[in-house]
Image (tube, rainbow, N blue to C red; front, top):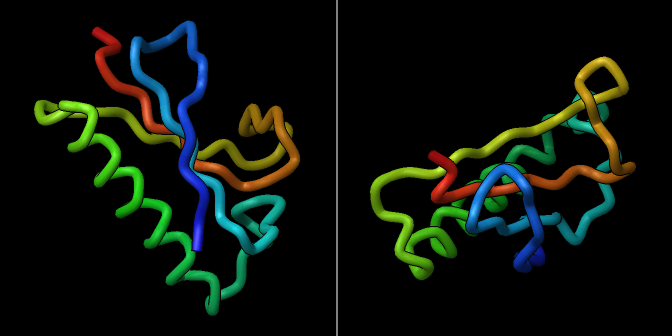
Length: 84
């Protein structure tokens, strides 16, 4: 239901991207029926965080639209860890 891969970040030592296989461009465009997709992205990221040893916390953020600093044209959920 989603792809999770390592990413590069200047903000954190560990970064994963969770991307839904269903194309959703922006969170405000998601429909009520997309709720399970979004929840799957959240739980998939949590599993990868645990596998990577991020047991004391991590940071998730969703940018939506130009005023929300969305820089790429698809919904994705970055997971940042070890970013103290």
